Length: 98
Length: 470
Image 1 (cartoon, rainbow over the protein chains, first blue to last red):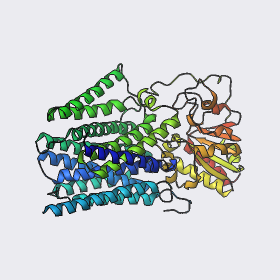
Image 2: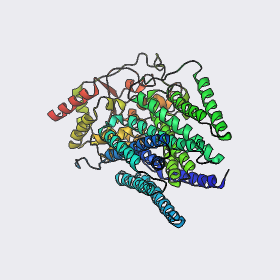
Image 3: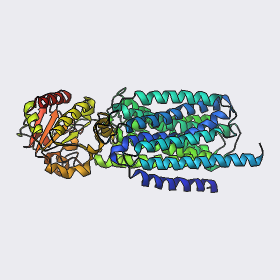
Image 4: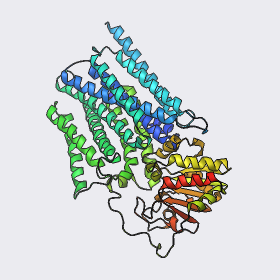
């Protein structure tokens, strides 16, 4: 196993612990927005997709790249927007109508 | 571009990625309270924007044409879905998004392998291993999510689909994929077999979700949520990109926590949920000791009187409530009661709804203020002091057999102690058993009154009665 992989593993493992700490404190009431929001975060793979489509190496890689961008962008945009739509419905008092 | 310039740019991009990772973590942290959650989501979204903009500066990118096409198309579809989806359909939506994220990760890793095959790069064994993991996990997340979507959307049957020797076949396919992945790492690039591996990953996802019943989908979606994160993390390993690794780990952890909570709330182990095809047959017989017991029903008038003169009322909503779209009627009834000085709360079981936290969203949509939505552990001690518990569309989660009847299939499952309220009113269409296929003791208790009929209709009648004044 190479040094680079070990460093990446380091980051990965520590981030998992951060994730457990932070997400363990999210109340059950907000678990659906948590899922859609964290789901949008996993769309970060879009940064990889951008490079694949942008370096224009072969037709195949452009096709893969554009497909990946479309899917990841749906994931990101759809995820954050729908999370916002849900969270704005959570109100402390009923009179705070839209 | 000079070397120093390139180095400076790369430093800038990587610093931006660090900012993005920090924004993701702060965003998730702000989700720990309903008051700050919306801001948290904006933080996380800003992190994503920072990461995307920084990536576009990369000198690896030589043309923006296709990037713009992809971004515009994806953003349009994403925004459309987010705006039009019904709140009851949120589990399908999340399944779909999980699947897309997983597929995107697999595609990015796949491109890296194709470059390897074309001789553009020659990756180390480490990189090749993570490519294989990314493709396997991303691929199965995609196809598994699509099946979960189809089941939830009722495009296909929600019942578990099983056949003889299913576990054996699944194990062979899975084992075959692992062996193939290992072999691909060991040998020089082999594109045809790499494509076979992709196909196997897709098949595994399908085989994984097919035998799982519709009502167990909360667990499956949580798990696939975790997988979509891990797939992104693996792609981060492939690209040696820390922001992908951190985000993937965060989402992976989140999905695992939610999966655990769901399993605990159903009192079943994860392997049991995944591999037992629960709910494939409905048990014909009820629990022991139900014979000779009588069910007491009441009229809407009586129920209105009971509620109108109560000091405290707890509503226990189940998914049946959401199916009949009666959230708004419940809230209207609750408003009327509150105007009369009745203390109103909602008891939310962790598995109420079709995904973690789903019932809270459905009630929030009906404009129920969130301080009234109370988690199981907090509300259970309060039932004893409550005059009336109103059970609407919930069944197994209020069955006292879970507490004491060791022979019951749901024994040990944490339940809402609705039966401890002074009076329990159960709104129910008929005496049909719930998902677990067993009779509910609660319905036969002396302090229980059944209000038969469609929940929405009964609630509307209750509202009318109370408006008339009792």
